[in-house]
Image (tube, rainbow, N blue to C red; front, side):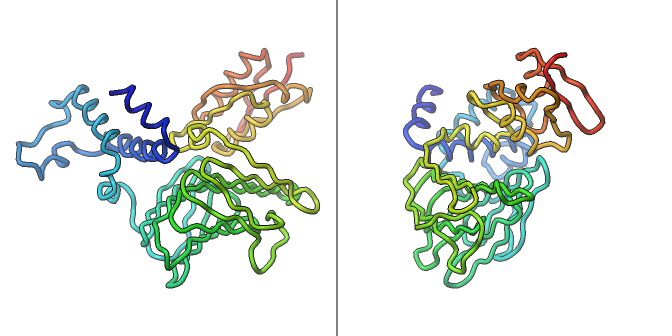
Length: 311
């Protein structure tokens, strides 16, 4: 059963995304009374102690193989919101929002969006940076438009993620759009905007990521195909690194914690390579691991962790 499930996930990015949604449901199960969940059934109620781990595994397998029946069940795990409003997450927090049109938004750490569901269009503005996964409900009469960093992403019914990195100088601002399923077009906001936007509309294909980095004049454009499981690892409260620099890994880990990691002293320490899977929000464990692997010095200070090359 496990091999069949893994093979099913490997066949499509949409399958992997569906399994991620199923995993979220499974993680919420410990907070649900099984006796209450089964109370509507014909049989007697079953306590969590009586069910045991084997029943939990059978239930998990059933959830994985029957993920497409979760549509109605998901409603009990997320909050329904009004058609328009502002939604935000704090540092290290994730939040799932089910909009009035059936679209599902998953907000990553330190993200803020403004939603306006109108009669002719659906518009979401990603404000102040952040990262959001959109699973858009189909509605041919109302295009779904995400505005971020001077660009707008236009879709009808599809799944894609948007990540905006804003800096104080605005010289290193960036926008990354990753398409998991369906089709989207990325273009400059019609009103014009001196931020990060393509010179001409870009049509994306499933599995593709479009990254725009502001660099003085026209932004630098990079197109690649990342691994979906690594890209969405934050939904499992994980960060996955595959041969990235320590500086990049530290920057990513710092998004999820108020205890910041700082590289001090010899700048060559930041060039060391990092691979692995780490728990977001646990900067101390990450710092200890990379310090041990690379022979670096770690100093714990109030509110920060200092990593440096040994003297």
